[in-house]
Image (cartoon, rainbow, N blue to C red):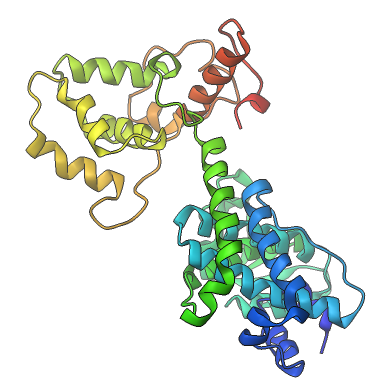
Length: 354
């Protein structure tokens, strides 16, 4: 058993076997002082996901420290499950996956194949250092990557097999682990252990509130008209003037306002300013876009290129024309930050928009 690998990739069967061999079960993890460091590290994993979008990778030289690292993983998952927030779940899954990706690019082929098998991806390696994976697996994991290098035309495919360098293969495994974690959470936590977790769950809840505030385009201050991009200003004017908005425009304004933190009541007020407003006709469409009808997160606002494709890019200004300006929410953030600094209106670099 490779205990170093078990600690580095705690989702492996090898990790579970390592814990079982050392009689480390759920009750021990939750109640024993011996595993207090694992509980602390588990809480840290979740907090790091909120604070920096990446769980730190630590080098561990002895089996006790490696066991603590292994046991911190299920504890972190239990915290995320107890909090029960979709944003946290996705953030945590991504952070664990990014951590794995950075480790995986330096591994030998044996570990690469073990990890990929655990993630449900069949793969092999050749003497040239290329990893082979089946085309359907590649398509499923690469479809969300928008960079040109991931397009099929730029991929090395022969007879249904895709040939990838280790770096690109590891990046796809990041997507695979992220999907795996998201699909497995939330976990059911036995009632007798919930009280043991109260302090850590409260700590994470507070950090979550702070993170959401910081990541909100409005910084918790509510929407300000002066920061809206020209395209959204024009759509709002069209709505107020009773003009017939195409579905793409309604979709854009609803998703954008939702991303700014507005709820259904606030968004319906925007549409109610139209002279021919009929809430009975608008209610279903708005709630569907927001995700209120099926309990989902709803849709994300379209990027600038989508707005242009749909003919909704109205009156672009100098800020819109910056090379890094790719999304209406980036525009809003840039305008907001410029205003707080007392800057004159004008373009800022991409570092100002994230």
